[in-house]
Image 1 (cartoon, rainbow, N blue to C red):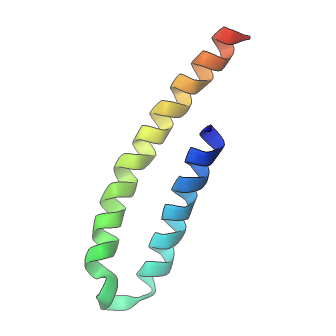
Image 2 (image 1 turned 90 degrees about the vertical axis):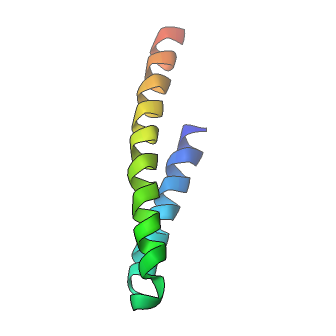
Length: 59
């Protein structure tokens, strides 16, 4: 499941990269997506840390 979460985050990053090339039409979308990504990346890092702790304890 962690792989799926990371893959989803990668897809959002790809969407941002693609949208940045759309010019002014996507300006608000890109700004909003950057804000979302900032928070999402922090959440994924925290989740990855917690997941690592659970895996280590269960071994």
